[in-house]
Structure formats: structure tokens, C-alpha cells
Length: 258
Image (cartoon, rainbow, N blue to C red; front, top):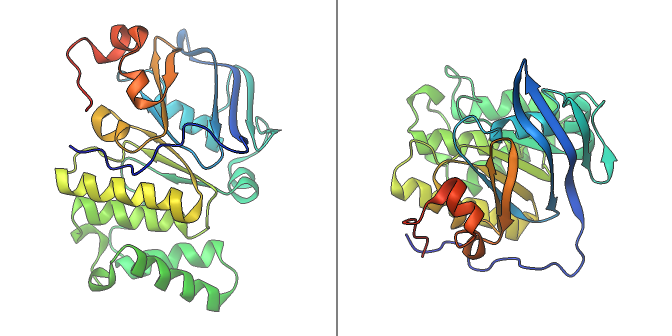
């Protein structure tokens, strides 16, 4: 597949770190998931996470949102340590949006009513609520689907809906968990274009974790490889696939990107 990204942000005129993990560890019982990891995600960046099953990619998302708390270390968002901040406060203050791998919508509500239900929780102004819903329906070309129940939508249409739901609150950070999983090639290409457009048009910082390495690398500015609880490598896509540590831990010798 051709590279979707029209440009890659290799450097920023003003580099602002938005998410900062400092010596973070987490264990479930005797099983160590994250072992003293440190990494940064810059404002306005599309950042990717790759690694084998169970390596801790989704766990990192749960740590950012506040669903779980690390054993030790600091997690900073916009320079503030958020370890003791509850989920709702992180969402409200730092405008963190989350797109889960599965679900994220009401099966028996129409596409429009899904947006309406969530907007009533997070948008106080009724007029702006309607304006925001209409904008997202138009942006994702969902006009002809707005009266269809979510359970009858295709995989790609459901993914569009969940992303639209996450954008109702106008997040500054968007976390996408396994967003390319179980989608056909054309739908993946559509989703890649949506992700890049969100960065270009809305300056949203986006973090993606997925097992579809080529699809992820085609639309990120930078990615990291996790293995055995550690950050093995972190670099631009072209550099990452040639990194010896990344090859040994994840890609292997036969992986081709371009």
C-alpha cells in the first residue's frame, strides 16, 4: 500500500511535549507488564505503538485515561503529573478522547441518536450541540446513515461513528486502540486519511496502537516498539524498520515497509 501521509513531522518549530511517561512500571500480580518505561509524545504528532500481544500497548492507553494506576513513575499531560487525577477530570481538563477497539456506541440507537445521547452529556449549549452533530455527520459523510441503528452499520461505518463520538468534545488528544483491526483494505485507507486530516486540520495529537504494522507506519510521524515490558526502539517509520533492535524484537528480517 502506498504511503498515505503527505508529510512526516520530523521536527517541530516549537517542540511541546504533551504526554510524558517517566520511569513507569505496572504489574498484574507477579506479572510485570511495563518495566520502568519512559517516552514522550509531542503536541500535534501522530504517534504509533507496536509490539506483540500482551506487551502493554492498551495498558498504556488505560494509564493515560486513568482507568488504571502505575506501580511507580510519573505520567504527565501538558506538564502536569496526572497520576492522582480521576478519569473524568483528565478527560475534561486535558481533553482526552478515546476510541476503543470494540464497541463504544449504543447498538439499538441510530447513528444520529448515538451522537445526540453523548452530546447531551458533554455539551451544555443546545444550539452548539446540534451544530457539532451536524458538522461531524457531514465531515465523515454519514448523512445517508444517520437514521440507521448502529448494530446494522458495517465495520468501517461503526469505526467512523465511534471516532465522531470521540470528537464531540473537541479533544486535543485522541487515543485509537487497534483501529485497523478486522477492516478491509479500502476501509483502512479511508481511516488513515481521516487520521491524517485530523492532524492537519484540527492539530489533534493522535496515538495509535495496532498489530497492522504497515497500516500504522503509513500514517504516523513516529512509532515505538514495545517488547518484554521495555521500549526497544522509537523513531520515524523508515528508521524504525531498519533498527536492529526493532527487527530482532518485532519486525524480523523479511518485513518490508515501502
